[in-house]
Amino acid sequence: MLWEHFMLNELMTRMQSRDVAYWRDKRGHQVDFVLARRGEKPMAIECKWSAHGFDPTNLLAFRHQHPEGDNVVVAQDVERTFTRTFGGLDVRFESVDAFAESVAEGPA
Image (cartoon, rainbow, N blue to C red; front, side, top):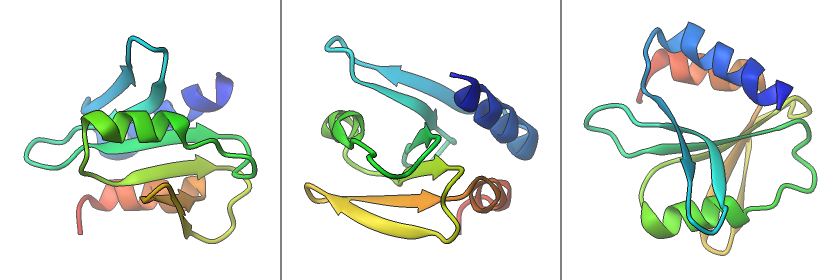
């Protein structure tokens, strides 16, 4: 939980915005943060201390309801950004710094 709070502080500081939401369904699936900027597809963000052993179940449940948008796992042990595919879902793994930089820059 401390890691998620740290990441929320980073998001709020870098974005200077309140477009950060939380998502949870009736079955208990949850996504740490959803960036919902006006006019853009929602970005699902999972914050994990370690990228190893990441379970995509919650992201898959979110994308079942909201099919389009980026999926990002931010982890302290990621040195270089990489992408993995889980059940047809592309998930980008980033370090805190790389993620904060990309969020501050906004959409490409």
